[in-house]
Length: 140
Image 1 (tube, one colour):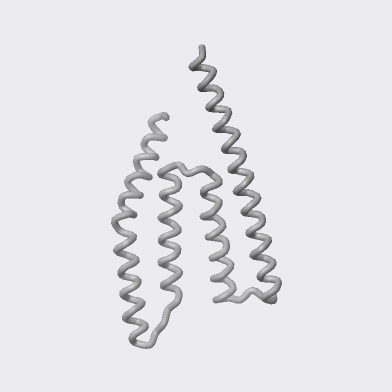
Image 2: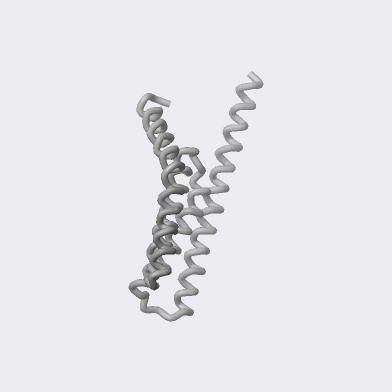
């Protein structure tokens, strides 16, 4: 690891520590605001989405800091894509029937299952090759 990568890693680590400290405070504040506004008769569902995206952003950050495999990160991509479709359909409206929306979700799920399996198998092959190389170097 060269100096630039170490510096980048250090910045990601500091950002993660800051996020661990600040995100619960922000989420608690949003929940309090949502409760007060609901009591006053003003329901803002967007606040729930803000909380969701804060948590998802934190999970993405953690996945990079702890160097999750590509196939682990595919689950986060899947969650993000489904949420974007849900929010878009709820606020703007996607002009397709419920049956077609269901089919869209099934297709997206199938694509992501394929990608997850593909990246998992690729990772397993890479790990197997690395183990083989280590064994060969130990035998010499």
